[in-house]
Image (cartoon, rainbow, N blue to C red; front, side):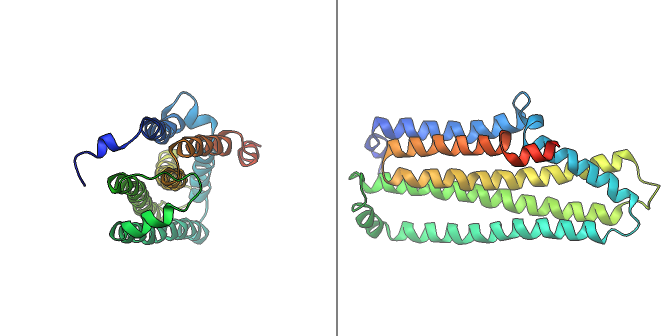
Length: 228
């Protein structure tokens, strides 16, 4: 990649890329750390039920159902982690077939002719997004493993404490949060694909992704049902 790749990007490219990074990083921060973000949305609602799950588990003598639920969650995370590996492998293969990719994209509507360096940067951005997603999914999987250990170490019925239920809910929520970050990376990865076509389409797609995520986190029927 030559040193002149910075100058190869147009002003719309830089605007769209800056908006993308601000939305991806900023939305995650607002949802998890912003004022009321972590308590008003699905994150807060799900944590409430995770805490109740921990309390109910401590009352049960047989905890096979709890182990099965954790196994189901781990299976979902494992599916996404495995899928992400294939996506990363495909993107690495595209890096080795860049000329064919450029020729194929040249026939797309509204596509612009850009240098090979620009295409490489765009592909590396997409690769970075899915690498981040992979790390999120695998860390979520490890934390769910820790959660299964907590179930095995849970005290007998009547001897459990609120502190143990709080610990169970905390690990459960941390695992779920990492899974949500991985899913969010997938959403923004879809937005990054549109950069290959046109920067303003990249800008618009990123904005749509944020609106979709916000609606699902704070304005969805699922959240209304969780609050009932």
